Length: 303
Ligand code: CP
Image (cartoon, rainbow, N blue to C red; front, side, top):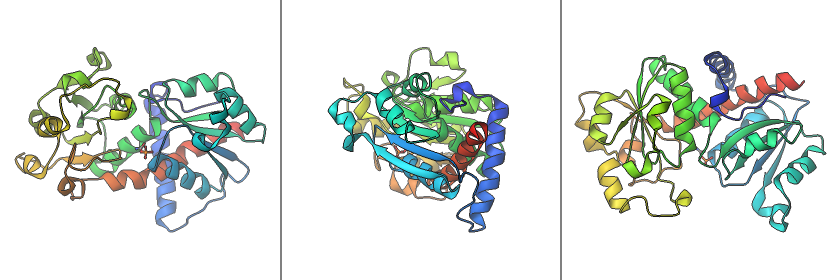
């Protein structure tokens, strides 16, 4: 069985194939064809052990647009609360003839663990601070759409790199496609030895923005911190928040991205998030086509 557990397990050709397939599905959606019969005999379970707005809805829409049968599971309203294990939970769902599992889980490596213990294709919809592969795919797809290519572009990922699965998956995806990548944030929120992934560290936001073509702004993930990593939100915003004045002081127009959810006024001001420079809602739109492509390519291996 083939899975999508992380960008780490893909190569450049895999990414190109996903993007070409997503192009096809995006064209279909743009022609107002909301549903294709491609996955009519496939059943997919979306199992979410962590909150989600974009990823959950985007996968469900992608599945329904491919005509798959869909069941949704939220851990909070399930028998996980009575002590049922992850493997038991998933094996019970699979015994109802489910073919694929899309899973979000707070533990890094949860998808990898599951893939070794159950007989179904697993799609990682975010595992703790580890990977969020479909987010990175839709991010690169959106850069490709906006700038023509990802290769050779300068991309800075700004914010809480230490706790971010979006950052790690993006670094893998961008490097595979030949982009130049820097990370920018407080030293306390940048993992040690991150340079070993082929990225540079820049702690001055203005310098990072002057260098880049694209800035991907991340949220500080307070829910993943057990100690205070940075003195205050106000100080974070002053040093690492992007605002219109800062963008206007650059001698070029850069592309602004954000995976969501946004903390308006913290890492990004509303006048930037809602500006023409921002492709935030295009990222969300592209997520459906990219996830359709991922599901279609995986399903074609289990049919
Ligand atoms: N970008 C993202 O993963 O958003 P959600 O947590 O709302 O799914």
